[in-house]
Length: 222
Ligand code: CA
Figure 1 (cartoon, helix red, strand yellow):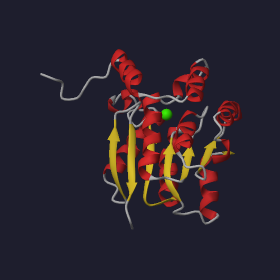
Figure 2 (cartoon, protein in one colour):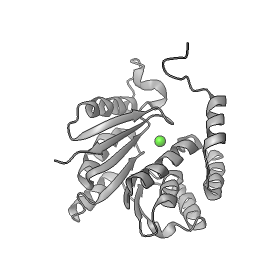
Figure 3 (tube, helix red, strand yellow):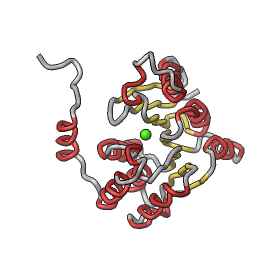
Figure 4 (cartoon, protein in one colour):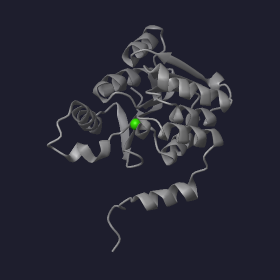
């Protein structure tokens, strides 16, 4: 009998990536460089990057908002899938990590599509709302400090248009979400947002087990 849910193993995941991921050479170079860095584990998986790129194409997204850029794998994946006049507003706080991102964006020839803001993202998002940018984004990717996930989501819900999509990363948090002994602030914040999204009438949701768990919240018309 097959398992009710497939148990993903490292060799099977390697097969999936090998047989199904077409990684742009600059993405491959970025993956290798990031993997050698101390926080390299934070990088999204190549199949997730490719899935997000396909989502950009499927939705016809032109304006993207990213919270948590790190060394730029997700933004580069999405930027490569955007039309030439498409834009990504990327938010991060690390000059060191985003310097790696900027170098690879330039190498891939898509740097003109990305605007990076180095500041706490809640401030940046509030600034966008003050500037009248509510409802102006097609797609948002949340992948930053987990304690602020709810704030990013709430700001994002204003900034994304009806019919737009918010992607929330790490929603399974290495499996910690079902470990009740784990009351870490990050784990608690992820659990709380997961619980809230299930009943949030402002969106339709689906949660995928890709990577470390990825939720898609599709904003309903109000
Ligand atoms: Ca992540």
